[in-house]
Length: 317
Image (cartoon, rainbow, N blue to C red):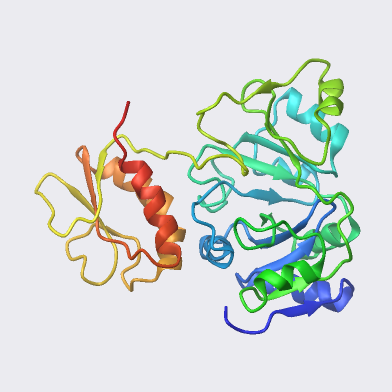
């Protein structure tokens, strides 16, 4: 962060450098057939947190995990008959499948925004495929642009918005499709979660029946929708300076004495973001019905952390 972003050529040395940066937990933008993605190792919580930091993304929405092939995808998600049929028909290609997350997937909880599903895609394109094989792991990647800005279809677009905020961009020419992937949920009945670069008519033809649509207000399972309302069973009280005897303290910073769990003892917001969903789950198991959360600064990633905590603390229906 804050240094010049490397521009890498999509050949052997550039691909090796990109894969090495990803292994170090750094951010690398790379071309797919849809748009340029902002990639991080999906298994490293701090690396995934840096995606939100670099983009200025206001909420922890689910991210798409890019993998080299279906066999790799099966390590991270559970595919039913419909999901397998769609993967067989359209992968590699501009289709993301949201499927149940395997308990042993080993992905950062930030990737799925604490949900029990994960969005997986096998991108088309020589550069994306070459990087995935070089890296030999799952790459979480939303579009490589500041949050709310136009998605990038060329390396120059990436640098216009993120130069100095990411480690490198792998320059592979213009994106072929120029529109984000279509997202289909396959966690119950196949349903359209986001229209995109693959026409829904082609998907319905492959399935042999119409797609369902996600009801308005349903908890989102994919990017491009409203942020999910992650709510533990325990009640949540924010900005807790004093903790009641029956409250479980989820702390932040060196002053959160008595906290059984601390999102970041040193007050590092990247570390806190990486720990957020896992620690909320742990606190929910350990609390006696009430969780108190230390104040989180409303700066940088703190805004995204507070957004998610506010939703967790919202009154229940």
